[in-house]
Length: 297
View 1 (cartoon, one colour):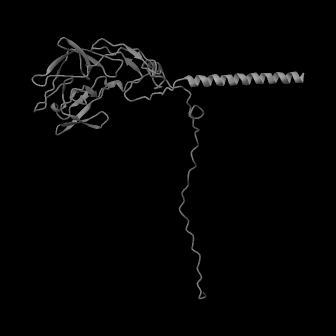
View 2 (cartoon, helix red, strand yellow):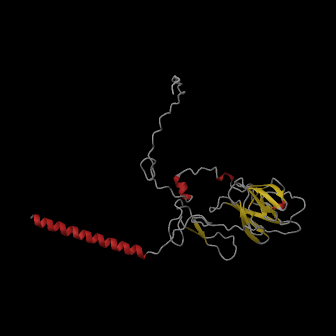
View 3 (cartoon, one colour):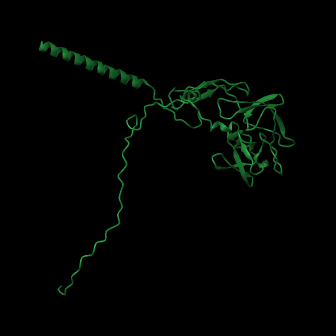
């Protein structure tokens, strides 16, 4: 009976080791067959939240969007962990170039409608120019029926612009608040797009205009760069509380794992007690020993 039991144990251990070696071999072959995919890093101007399908020509029709949930569209690997879910929104294509005449009276445009856009923080405005329609970023007090002006003329005397008007930076007086500033003339508004933000024109340096950005940094632009006057809409965006975890999911924010705890959870650190109080005493003065001198060497 003892011999039978010994041989049965040996056969079981041999079969187990064979299965283990076979599993290791299969996993090694599977790992070797995988291509060497480099996981991309977030940033560098690439969005991992959504892909907007732009047509060939500009249109005011809301565009289709593919939500990525923080994944790279090529490899499918998770790049940004905090993105996921969210309500599916249509994308309104903004015409960033506010182009107007270089001489004569400014070009007038009429605001048709101001609406919210789920893919950006600021509101957008539908504007009509003759028989053409386009979307622009709405200012704080913009409403339907307003007439806004656009001009690339650089006059000798600064103009008195209203909210929503677009002029070159050299035509606006010092202290004017602006947004949608061009990096180079004719390139289109590149700076200051977020809700409630604005820049301030501080001073002129020869043919350069110094603007204080929302980050309090000072940027120097060419005087022929276009800028839109006024503060961007949806000022209370940063002060509005989310309110509930479910609404946070609607906004497209993925919750944390819940495994992290300060003491014993994932990446936990033990909370050490504070060190005892160090007592500082006044130094005790000891009397110096007496020195006996004699004449002996």
